[in-house]
Amino acid sequence: MEKEYQIIDEEKSINAVQVPKDQAKALGHPVRIRLLTYLCEREAFPKEMARAADVQEQQAYYHLKYLISAGLVVETRRKEVRGTIARAYRAAAPAAFLTWSEKWHTQRAKPHQREILPFFQKASKENCIQVIVGSSDPHGPFKSRARDSYLAAELTHFLGAQNPDSTIRLRLDTEVDQHAQEHSCITIGGPITNTFTSSINALNSAKFSTENFHMIEARKAYTEDEIGLIAKTQHPSDPTKDIITIGGITEKGTRAAILAITKYHKLSLHRYTGQKRFHAIVQGYDTDGDGIIDDIELLE
Image 1 (tube, helix red, strand yellow):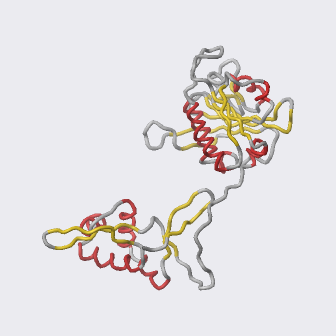
Image 2 (spheres, one colour):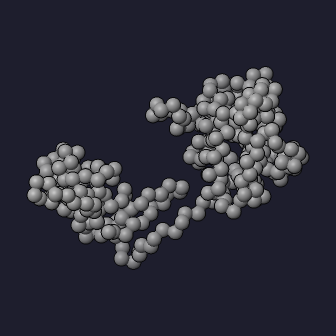
Image 3 (cartoon, rainbow, N blue to C red):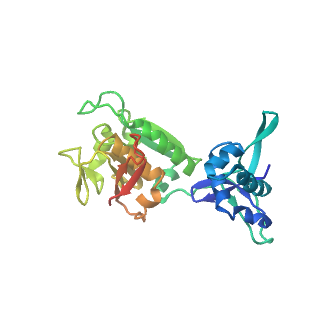
């Protein structure tokens, strides 16, 4: 079994094996690339590989020999078929790398340490990040039930990875008191389902319309369900603390805003340079048609 490594790019990583440079030719044929791509997803016997790569079975065996020698493919099991032994294989890892210099020695990757995003630094410095979500019980002037509070789990997982030393405290908007408001906090959801979002809405540079909470007012007015808002402002009584709003016109909009932070923050927060007030408007898209927002576009 080849030693596995990790290739790390910013916040993404993928397992990989090292290919000896004298075996580099193993990657030099399109059929071998097709076989590797197929075997990354599944275990297969040579007959199945040949069908997937659109070659004869003997050709599949020929190219498989190079992949095995380079450590890119490994045998997983054997079974008897009509008196002969058939062998199944899979890719050793979903990626591979080459090194050209003997002076550089590979080492197992150390755990990837993320830097705290500047956008969350004030909240993180207090070592207690407060996340305020709407109650699922009827509450507030609209007697509404929050249906997007589950999205807090995605955000808190992201923040926990950013700063493992911080305590993340989840609070319902119906539980928030004056003491809670004296700390930096993140409020999730729009003003209809989160009364705390409503109470600080006017402080933001982009805000939900007070006449129609189904509209976000920024450089222009937005009314689509998939529109999300990310906003940051100073605490009105303590400028050393921040209040961050992550919400949408509907649950879809809130999901788009959460996704913009957890997956696309380099895009959504690229204009943030420490401003006292900041906002970003995003629109969510369901690219694979499964009914769940999985991509975003930065509108402003």
